[in-house]
Amino acid sequence: MAMELFDHNREAYENTVAMLAETGKAAVIHPTGTGKSFIGFKLCEDNPDKKVLWLAPSEYIFDTQIENLRKAAGGWTPDNISFCTYARLMNMPDEEIAAIKPDYIILDEFHRCGSAHWGATALIGFCLFMPIFLFSDFPRPTSATSITDAIWLRNCSTAI
Image (cartoon, rainbow, N blue to C red):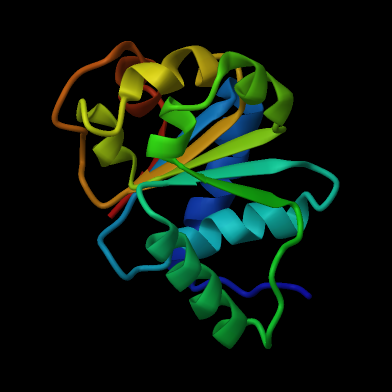
């Protein structure tokens, strides 16, 4: 299956891949409904031998994205994604987190990571040395954390 991206997402994907290769971190800031998740799915498709941890605020969000992908891609879905909510990750024991060992981490709706509710601090130690691809429809999370400063401010691959 070769996913075809809309032009704005193809450009974002190419910029993201280049930035991930250079810095290990990349952010895509596009409005709701513009296909940010398809950029993440393309990364999964192009790296089938890599394990991808996809984090999102809720299972509903991820399930909806998978459903949209199936419709657009003739039923295809990547089999190299492990999904987890931010809340679940925040409550995992250290041993379980250590056992995940992803090659890439995708942070969906990253702007929610800055709130105490979603526990950005639980992500900091886990994510600082991992290749991270994040996307949001907000230009910057509302609270500053070291993960925000390390990823968001210096590694925006594309913004609409």
